[in-house]
Length: 210
Length: 210
Image (cartoon, each protein chain N blue to C red):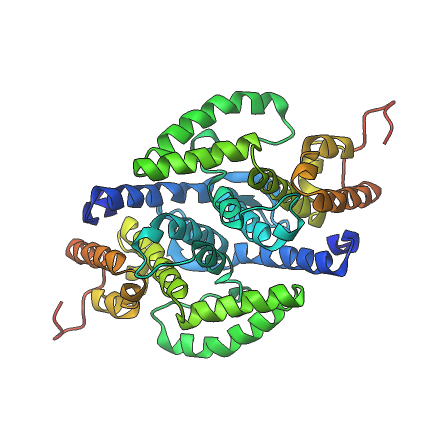
């Protein structure tokens, strides 16, 4: 098949166009999260858009001053490695452990399509995000978790119930939201109290407190 | 149904959460553009993500200096009015004329969900984009057109052929790309020459030059 890169004037633009074509695949990486009307699960491209727009609107709640442009660029690229590595349920610790190596290889290949300067910049940004190494990364990680929690609440816990997730599991897995935004973590806690009362979450195992 | 807004501490956060829930519908507004593997048409949320990421990567080709954060925020919100007004083929001038009023009403409703300051800010940003009133808006409009042209080329003209679009129609409808980025417009012209040679575009009517 012919490729648009053949019509780019310079090798630099050609590599940027290659990347633009490759990342279209993010639209086919399906997540565990349902759309709010429960009609289907959402994909990584849709999630990345929602995340970026919410980050832009909710930046006033960041724990520290953040460079919003940097947060938005993190949001836009944070899931690209899943084109090769796939999406793994955030509550599945065993599966997540095996992901790190796959994701590093994916980062090498996908960011490697870009001109060297841009590839290195986006890879650094993705690693900063993954490590929650900066105020921007901590805030971005918070929004990346708040978005699917809103979806779960709106769908009466559809994904939580699919996977037997209890309120304690949600609190433990997402506690880092507080590092990025104490205000949004307080909101999430109130939402989870109500979700538990309504039966949107799985019951804790016998003998444990609710 | 219960709503997450009931768990927001302040009216301000409650309105932001209302907006976050409402805009999930953008994921169901289907465009005419096919995914690059032709498996299905893409939706506005996926397009907005792709547009924003490409704008971030291709900003070096903008005709004038641009504030990239402003461009990204335009990309993230530019299609929200289509939640109410729907998507219209860019080549259908008659349908587009009727859209303006619908889109104004949609902007009123959807941006009106937000706290007043943020709603006014996003509406102004959307109007700036629509009017191509600033360097940021002209560059954003260019990327908004380059993205589906890449999709059309990658799918051997799938949407162009669905709608009988000729090379002359693509050139006329997208000529404003040159205002946002002469370099990207030159790239598009080379891509269209090749697309026409390969038969990806409809033939011009009898008696007109190709």
